[in-house]
Length: 154
Image (cartoon, rainbow, N blue to C red; front, side, top):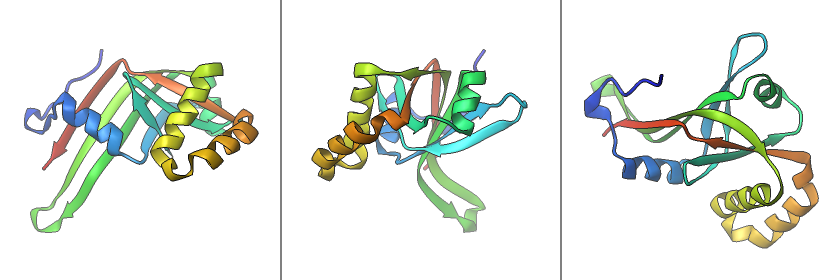
């Protein structure tokens, strides 16, 4: 069902895969809409125990697509460096596939806390207040990874 990496020499191990997911500031979530067109949107995310969490508006393109089709792919890239003299690019990336579900209650709170810790660690107290005041205006989604690969050119 899922394809493996074709270029075996670019395949990264599990440890590097987890490092990429920890280090990446954003990834691109790709969904399919009711019109059949793909939609890729950058999202901040956190990863824990084969789950990718991200948030979004209550209404919009991403929410519409996910309510139509819960299957998605997600790609995160780090350490990008153009190598013009080699006509190439250095990078490390992860691609994940899964169905996506909206989370609520304690899982939503936990995801928001992980997002605050990753992206606003120096502002946790004000971040908690912000989430308490505005968290109901956002959806939090969980992508429980079914298949994931990592590759790179070093």
